[in-house]
Length: 344
Ligand code: ATP
Image (cartoon, rainbow, N blue to C red):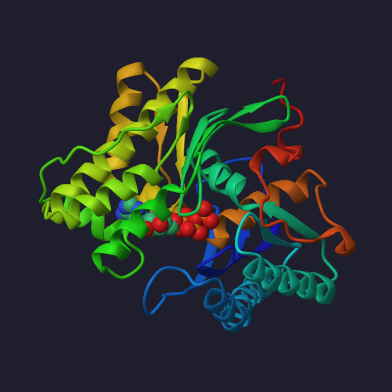
């Protein structure tokens, strides 16, 4: 099976071709081609209108490149039909204007090639790419991305939200702090670099049960630099505080569910300190930990195509007239059809 994936929830206009003999089996020779054109704001953070303009300009090119690649693969295999067997797209959550462009492109390609259309939840794709690449059976997933922060676990046909942010997404909190300091978007990699030179500066630690809050940390971090605390110390404090909170909730989720596998997802997951803290926590409790490669952690169409392939195999496709986007699409709204044969 060969699936075209199209991603476009915010900054990444991305298209992928995922090829597999059996979407339910983790094979080392899986073929994943990804073409991404990233939106980079000139100043400030992501401006929804500019992001949508970029999406509209970039999607035809990335989809065209991915389709050419699929055609080459099909020709090499001596196939004469359409170059892909299905078209999967990110249906939400994300910025509405960006999602609408992606959905329109996906519908057009699916109709033109006369292949099924698949609507993928972007957050579930962040999770499933880790499960797919690790070969783990039923992990808890920590999604640490720009606009979101969730801890998810599978139960009775759904990914349940065990814990989540009560206010801003974790990456957005970091980016808002770095904007205040005058650094260009995205802020996460800059905070990671500067934190290595800094000493820990205490910031508010807010975990309530299984939920976390980042807006108070962000305000306190801004205040600290305004009060002349060295910026590298504030960066170190942000990393230690935010990642300890994420690690605490991930550990509680492992403990409460009895799971012994943890996967990481989302762009903030590229941070080595976060990965190190999670790995150490898992080692201490005898759990397995997996962080996908960076290209599968940040927004990418590879994860959309991979989950799309599993959904197609489960018959989970969309009629064009039902293929509307959902900018607030929660992971627990998704019937997990591709795991329907599992007992829990
Ligand atoms: P979502 O998946 O919620 O739609 P998103 O569209 O913002 O998120 P992602 O690619 O998942 O996109 O995450 C982007 C975020 O990751 C940005 O906030 C960025 O600052 C952050 N980030 C990137 N690299 C790092 C890093 N090394 N350390 C910390 N944060 C990072």
